[in-house]
Length: 483
Image 1 (cartoon, rainbow, N blue to C red):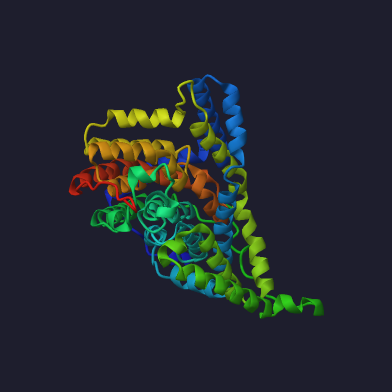
Image 2: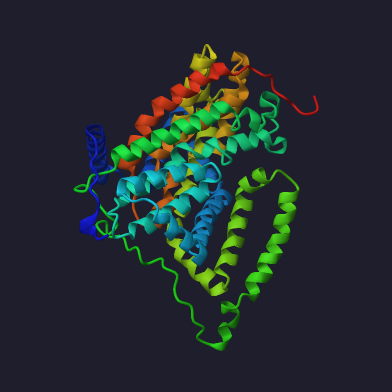
């Protein structure tokens, strides 16, 4: 089918209205939305001013910023490896072939955008890194189709949906994982929350309801906001080269290259890694083991080695993946500084800015329904400044869960209320877009016009759903092992 033979799509009036609204936001974002680096620096300055006003000690704020700047370097490296190992794996010939096969499934550009969005959410329930990288590369593969005329921006935004409304509802939930593992719960938090199993959080029927709700809602928004043919901008229109990541044809040039083109070293390393993985998975719940970032990255690294088979192919793909992580390396340290300014700078009474914000919300709540809404709003607001679900939960949990006990709100669903709302800022905050933007070779302004509309529609609906589901639970006191 040639480009001129593409079957026209006839959107309904409602669809055209939503598409026009989305294009207004897209147009605004293209003109005014700053680069992700500007966003993080502005957020950093806002928190610094707030902390200085709260504490009255600008020098303490400056010290906290410097102390925190390198505090999440291990986490930064983990995020870099998530992007690189996913990219390397997807650049292997077997996975590239699978991507090409999947990319042929949708028959229309609108259907392709919906397909990518739903797949992004479903994959994120297993692992957010898999969702982000696989769907980003799937967008590139679909964009190569000459019979689709795919809007590259809308498709890229759809690939990001798992980070905006999916990953904390499944196995990728750092908060649920932490609360289910007694050895991971901070000693100061354990008496407040006890151990909360998955059967009280991600495996409840209420959570399934939310998963279905956000998936259907996201798919409808993708469908309604997909631009018409006149407004469509393909990868070529945006100046994106789709052929710069194709696996090169490998040929050995000299005798010294023997081991680079032989699978011998790959076999040795993979066997060595397989022994470690066997022990790691044998000693605990496989789902929890796989959800650990180091284990996840190790698995993907070993799979990448195995599927590339020859070291030269693996090394070439690793180098090609490097541009996708530049933004992560630059911006993550700023978030470390923001986290310290929020949590380490106290006033004369020993209260930090994070404490002050949390206590304000807790004091306003008078029943579990209102409490659910306040937790949602607070988690979403703080998520703009600390977009790390696990790290932010450790900050919020002592105050939120103390209030939950006092109000006799279900502890497991309180964790899920946090999870449901915590990801909403990701639709606007470009923090987690960085690996995807590197793969797509776009800037945050190209996607945020579409993702911000997802934010505005999702926010009131999911917060209300979380509050309405709270009364379906019965309060259970904290379960503390050994007591």
